[in-house]
Image 1: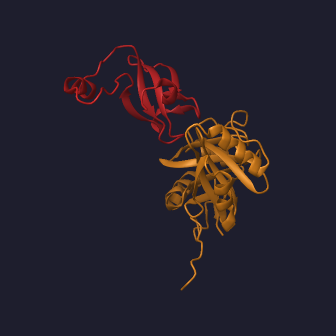
Image 2: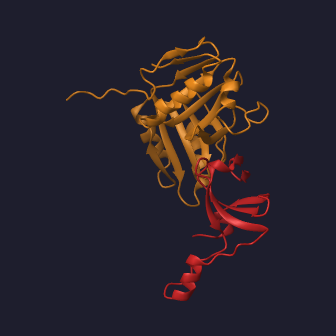
Image 3: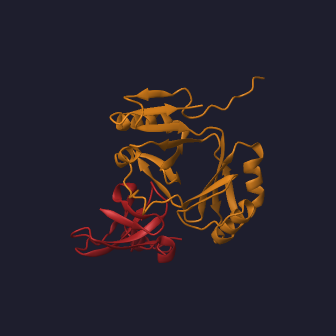
Amino acid sequence: MADLVHRGGYAGLGRRVGSGDGVLAVERAGLAAATVIARRGKAGETAARLGSRFGFAVVDGPKRAVSAVATVLGTGPGTWFVFGEEDPGFVAGLRAALAGVAAVVDQSDGQAVLHLSGARLPELLEKGVRIDLDPARFTPADVAVTAIAHIGVTLWKIDAVPTFAVALPRSYAASFRHWLETSAGPAGLTVMSD
Amino acid sequence: MRIPCPYCGPRDSSEFAYHGDAAPRRPADGDAAAMATYVYLRDNPAGPMEELWYHAYGCRSWLVVCRDTRDHTITGAKPVATHGATA
């Protein structure tokens, strides 16, 4: 039987638009991803177990906690998105660590993640994001679940440069790239995928 | 119109789905008249009103939002869980 090869949501879509130097979009392929949804009344215990598993503090709020091995993003009351490096044991280990307190669903093949940076990135994000991304209000500790061009996205900031990350259902990747190219065209865009 | 989601912060109303009056409570089974009232009859106040809104493009919470129906002034939003509108 032929082996199935993982193919990122943006695979094969690499190209330049305009000058190519205003915004850089790089696909972050090969991530393990899982949603964690606490059972009724177990949000606090789920946050505590997530924190002890990865060695950082996890709160029940729209906040990001990160280490070398995992990123935990608050996406709703008692729910989190957890990303790690590609590893078949990542989600299974998470499920075992949260047994009895939360439902863990593997989303590794369901999400497409882009890292966005560049001198004219703020100008691009203004065209699609309806929340305040001023550096004083939206920091690398924050997470936003919102919509860009009617596509539901999870948005967070990796560093203060700024570099943003956008995760969305991978079947929307082509539609999102259409928004990206249309909106970033005047500034110049380079899309890179693995 | 901006809705102050208790989890996400202030968000545009386009991220939300509107459900309507937060006041009606489902009556016990078997009371047809009360059920008809629950299903069909709604007040239409001119002024502050508690309504159910679902934050579909955000944290996916049901909220009870207090909105003035005359000018859309929003004076508060809280999770349904603390309001007790639905089980």
